[in-house]
Image (cartoon, rainbow, N blue to C red):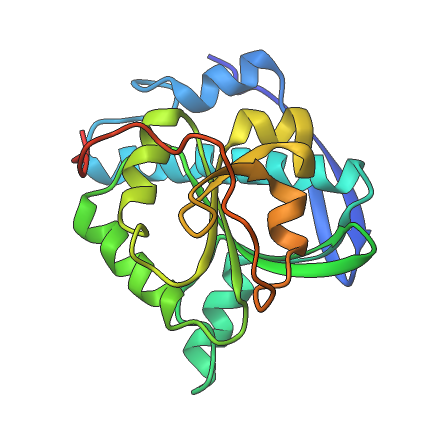
Length: 221
C-alpha cells in the first residue's frame, strides 16, 4: 500500500519556524490506523503513533493562533527540553510549548499543555506541583481533547495558588481567546482573554458561573 503524501508549508514568525502540514483525511487515517500502516505490534510502536498524532494536533493549535494574527512567539518542547538539560535555572517542566500571544492591548506568555489521552491521577499531581514551582511563566493553558479529560486533568489543580486555565481544543479552534475556560481560582468558566489579561494583584468579585460538576477525583481509563 502506498504511503500518503502531505504538503508542508513553512512559516516564520517571532524567530520561530512553523510548519503547516496539509494532511488530508486519508493522511489522518494513515496516522491513526494500526497494523501494516503505522504498526501497533508492540507498546513502543503504539507510543510512536500516539506521539505523532499529538504533534499533528499541537501543530494545529499553533496554526490556529498564527492564522488569527495573535501569535508573537512559539517556543516548542524540544527547545524547552534542551534548555532544561543545559541550564541550571530553567523551566520546571518540559511544556508542550511556551507561547507568547497578543491579548487585548498587551502580550502574555503562557506554558501550554495539550492532553489528548489520559494519564494517571498521580501524574497530574506531579505536573501541578511543577507548575506551582514555576518561576519563568506565571500563567498556564491546558487544552484537552474532551470534557472528561478536562475534568480528570483539572482535579489535581484544585488547591493550587496558580493561574491555570482549562479548555477544550475544539473551542480553541472555534473561538480562540473568546472561548470559555475553566479556572479554579475564578471558581468557574470565564472568557479566556479576560483570565489572561487580569491583574492577579487586583481583587475581583467571584463569578456567578457554575463550576465543573463532579464530586471527587476521576481516575485514568
